[in-house]
Length: 134
Image (tube, rainbow, N blue to C red):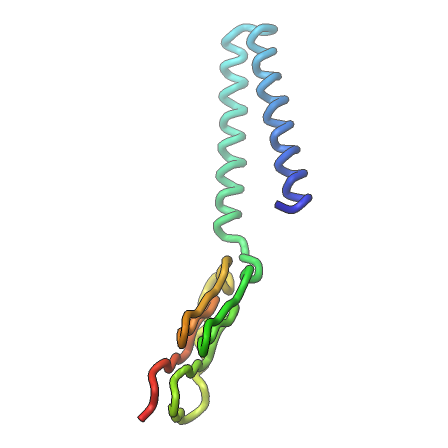
């Protein structure tokens, strides 16, 4: 967790604590009906904020993958791969295909790993040739 995230989490915790204490004081200082209406409004606002943050987290652009790793004779890339050849004696013809553009945020978060003679990419793979040629 970064320092900025720790500060944000701490600030949210303090605000939530203060709101809780304020609602408890309101129950004793005012009548129960007023405290009930106030708690309902605070709950509705908290629900809207939570929903907004959840939608933001779902649709935000992910950062770069934390790691890209390929084992022996494997191919791995954080973005797209036009053509990946891991086999022996393979002959290709023509230019490497261009992967189609995909809608939405590019790449994926998290590690990208390709096993032995495997191919892995954060986005699209146009062509992968993993077997041996004639």
